[in-house]
Image (tube, rainbow, N blue to C red; front, side, top):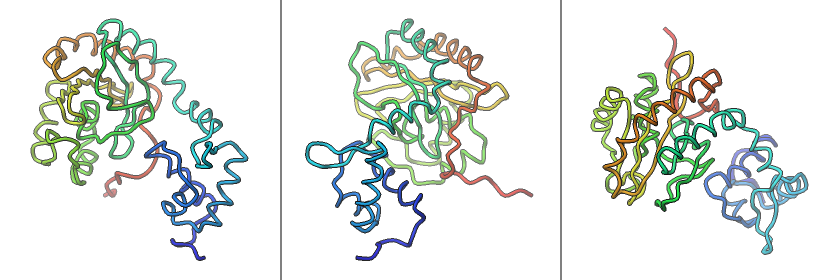
Length: 265
């Protein structure tokens, strides 16, 4: 049986297997891994066996593959310094608001959530630490877009904008106008755009050397959307403290892809 895709390096094949679990943590069978990666069954089986021996994947009681504990442990080192320094401040914001708060960065055309402190009130599940959502549909994403460089913002808005709910803004002109308002106001507010029943507000976390590095968000149920603006003084104060603590670290993801820099003159 021949490979279903052009020959890749061994590293590329291994990474394609790990990428299968990036969008969903659901266990996968050997056949599913083969189909999703385009690798022959024999190749997928051999590489999965090596990954299992190292601890990158493990099998459940049904013999299906899932992310292994060793890979999870390794992943905890990514951004750990930023999380350790910012976590007490997120907890302070939770103490002040009693609502769920999170910290996010931009990774290509998506929001990547790097930390979260859960409130006692139940809100529709929209994100998890390590999870991703579209920039244009989230309050943190819109803040990141609004305070980005013009060429980055233009490149991302030019890409297809999917509708997560009927209220998601997908018209490029309308999104541009909203981002302009966000830059002027200094915060973003979304209601029912990423998940029905949830509303969120976000402010930028700036880098010490200038430019946006991350976004600080707070999420509530839709019926409490009218209370969100009242949390802005606390959020802005915490965002400024995060900048002081971690602003010297590169908060943006350095993973390539998603946005290409303009050609030099």
